[in-house]
Amino acid sequence: ALGAAGLEVIDPAGQAFDPALHEAVATEPAASAEEDATVARVYQVGYRFAGQLLRPARVVVKQR
Image 1: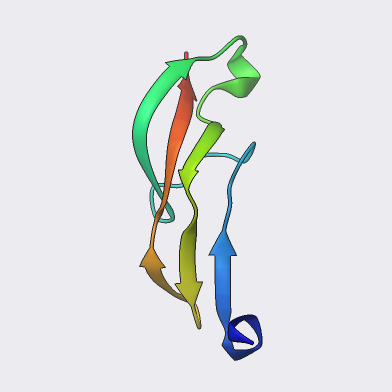
Image 2: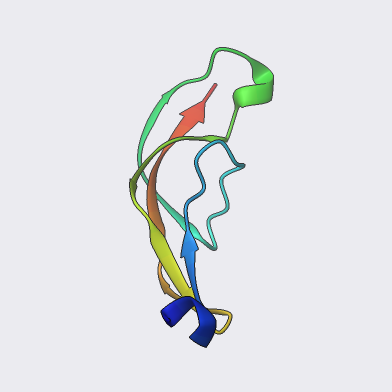
């Protein structure tokens, strides 16, 4: 019902890190340059309502 009203879940596992939507709580080593700045794990999903960010996703980012 909330999805129909405009609520979106932000679950960025495996996507590129976006500081506008994600909050990095930790980093871990990246195995290759292609994995640099990608989301390794999601601690807490984020939410966006009608295009406005309610809570950023808290994530672990791979860093080289």
